[in-house]
Length: 340
Image 1 (cartoon, rainbow, N blue to C red):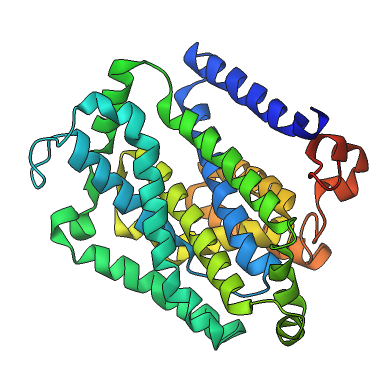
Image 2: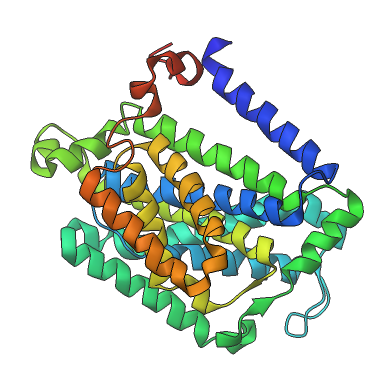
C-alpha cells in the first residue's frame, strides 16, 4: 500500500482538480495554464530520456510533437465530425468519448515510427552531428505538413473543437483536462519505471561509456531504438493533447523555437532528473504566463534568467538527482519495488 502512496496521492489530486474545474471554481484561463503544464511535463520528461539519461543531443522534439498532433487530429475529425475534405463522420460522434484515447495513442505510435528517422542515424553519429540530424527531421516534418493542402497546408488544420463538443454533449466534464492528467501521470510513471529498471540502466550505461556498455553485454542499438521511439511517441501524445486544447494547429507552431523551449526545460530541471523535468516544466510555464503582459520583451527577460541560472547553477535546479535524493523522506511515497 505504501509503495503506491504516490499514485494514490496523484489520483486524489486529479479528482479534486477535476471536481474544482467541473464546479467552475477555476477560470478557463487557469485551466488552460494547468493543461499546458501537463503538456510541458510530458515533453520535458520524454526529451530528458534522450538528452539526460542517454547522453545524446536531440533538438527536434517539436517534429515528433507535430506528427502526433496531426495524426490524432485527422483521425478524430475524420471519424467523428463532418469535414469538407473527409466528408461525413465514419462513426457516431458520441463514440469519441471512448475512442479519444485510442486516437491519441495512434498519434503517439505514428510519432514513435518517425522517431526511427533519428534512431538509425544515432548508431553511427553522436553529439553535434546527431543534433543536426534531429534538426533536419524537425524541418522535414514541418515542410511536409506545410505542403499537404488536404490538411490545410501552411494555413493549419482545425475541427478538433467539434470533437470535444461532441464528447461534452454526452457527459459535460472537462475531457481534455482529464486526458492531460491521465497521460501526464502515465508518462512520469512509465519513465520512472523504465529508467529505474535493470533493463533501463542500459540507457545510463550508454551515457557513461557506450563501448564499455557493449563489452558488458548491453545491446546499445536496441536500447537506442527503444529510447528514441519511447521519447518521440510520448512527444506525439503531447502533440495530440496540445492540438485538442487549442482546437487548431499549424506547422508554424512546431518550429525549432518549440524544440528549444523543451530543451530549456530539460536543462533547467537537470539532465537525468525526472523530478527535475517535472519541476522545471511547472516553473517555466508559470514564468511564461507571468511575463505574458511584457509581450515580446518576455523573450529578452527569459533568456537573461536562463543565462543567470547557467552561470550560478549550470547543472540545473536538481542536477542529476531526484527529489527523493534531496528529501529522503519522500521515498516512502515514490519508492520503486526494489526500494520498498
